[in-house]
Length: 101
Image 1 (cartoon, rainbow, N blue to C red):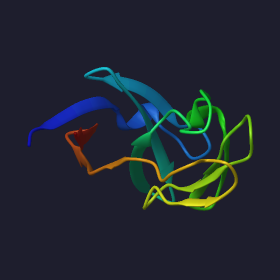
Image 2: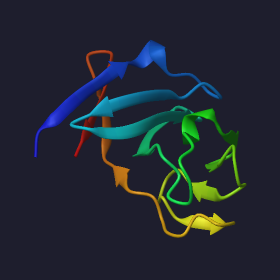
Image 3: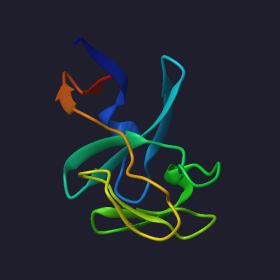
């Protein structure tokens, strides 16, 4: 699989994730304690962008119905999320955040 550049590292900050679209997939890029994570950005319960949610530690809470997901694993930790999130491998190269689909 190829690595795809999705944004520059300075476009993502703690508490300020970046919403991107790659190959018709909505993906959220999060920076937590100097680690980047990329997850499916749309809550599987109802259409809400997780990049607009509430971040606490390694979790993000859906802004609509309070489903809580682990950003590292994609696991649904509580609430009506219906299923785990898709996650994507992330790396940083030459000041760019790259993911694999």
